[in-house]
Every structure is written in structure tokens, then in C-alpha cells.
Length: 244
Image (cartoon, rainbow, N blue to C red; front, side, top):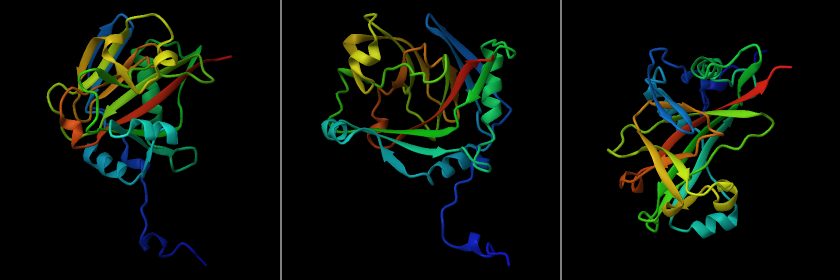
């Protein structure tokens, strides 16, 4: 007896990773900084609207400890939609392609270096609150931590339907040479501690590929847009390791 008959017709939310197919009609550009280059990839997803709809099926979990959440008060909300893609049928089709992009645009030796997607599906959710220190702080200036691998690459995908002029992604430079993340954290950072090196405008279905462990980066949100709507960005991580 087939016990699955009728199960798909019952009321349930089913997340489909198959929606996250890349367009293969990319338009490339790049920005050079002293910390490294950022590859700009427009038209990243094949069906961007379907991707936006599918993401809404994943619940949002607020990030931080109870103490951190209480201390941030009405400054901002930061959460994450996440899905672990470790089993057959749960892997989105971009997994091999993002590794290929890393190989191609950072001239890696495939014989000696392995570039592998980490296996996590992550969407960051951010909104400013009424007490956000707009005049004095930037958001989430950081470098990506590396665990169990010598290097880490990152792809950030802009997922909102539109962006006000000025919104984007920034490359930052700390004004001192200490371990910035350890000293100041990665939430909201006083503007007096960092310089803005470059701002890449946000654009729907635009992806940015860069060396996340080497470049100090973060969102750049100078407008009022994200007081009234969530800022959505997908983070895709590719770990580099040496073949033995």
C-alpha cells in the first residue's frame, strides 16, 4: 500500500530548493580595493520572483542571546531565515555553480585547492528601529570567521524588490590595525572607527562575490527605506581547502 497517497494535498508549507536555479545569463563587473576585489553579478537567479516567494516559507529566528536582544531594544531587529541542506533533495541547484564562479574569478588552482559550498541556506533579515543611531554608527562591519578551512569566500545576494538610491554594500577600513571584530563586535560600529572605502549600489537580483575573510564589509543603509521594511540579503559561503 502506498502510504503517501494524498499527503501532498494536506495543508502544509513545503520549501522547494529547486526554485534557486541560477540564470546563466549573468552580467559581470568588478570593483578593486586594497583589501581585494568584489565581483558584481547581475541577473543572479533565473526566476527572482519565485525565489522571493520561496524565502517567505522559512521562519525568521532573531539572532543573539537574551541579553543582546534586550540591550538592543528599539535600535534594530536582526534575524535569519535558515535551512540546512545536508540531505538528498534539499540541495539548491546553485551549489556547484557558486564553486565554479569562485574558481573562475579568483584564479584558483583546481588541482591544489578545493572550493566547497558550506551546505547552509541563509537569509539575513534587518530592520532599523526608532532608536537606531543613524548619525553615529554603521551596521555589521566585519570579516567572515573561518572555521576548519584556510580561507572563506562569500556571496551576498540582494533580495528586496527595489532599493532607494544610496542603499548598498560597503567595503570598510578600520582606522586601527587591531583585531577589529574581537575588539568592537560586529553589530553597530561607531563611524569614527572606520572609513568607507567603496559602496556598491544595491540592486534586485544582484550578487556580490568576494573574499569574505579578508575584506571588511557590511551593509550600507543611509536612507529611511529600512525603517519600514525588512532588508533581505542571502549569504552564501564557500570554504577553500588545500587538496592533500
